Length: 223
Image (tube, rainbow, N blue to C red):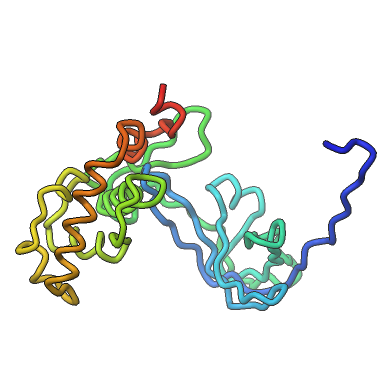
């Protein structure tokens, strides 16, 4: 938009053909079921692409994507891989339309699609996938920014039944952590110290935002 006398020219995005092997459905921290295209690896502008988001059920239907299809992929803005279209001339005779699951692939609960929404959503608050992603978000830079506590440690703590909500992180002691694989005394001490530091330094705004409540970001949390 500015300066108004200037014009920005962009190179056309690089495109390539590959095969859509299958479609997987992931569960986000708010329960949204997001389909992901699993592609036969293809080189695109110097990067090997093997996955691309398909956004939602309507997107799959609009592009008539079927497992086994040859598809054209590109990197939107030269960054994010996306499936552009199907090469219908190369469609296998046995390719069947994709049936989007209306149950959560993680917990098996029925998914719900709200009126006017494009996404199917798991509404089971005890869903393991939602728990993992929710707590990973809680400890991430977007949340309380707890140093040294990444997704792998979150997964280990949940798998051991030691953490079932973000609140459980603040009750962990060094003795609780030592039995975990690859957890030494110094690591356990650093872990507990990092959680304690976040408890002291994080603002109430950051805490509310870290809880990952739907439609509550930093600005709404501050309000």
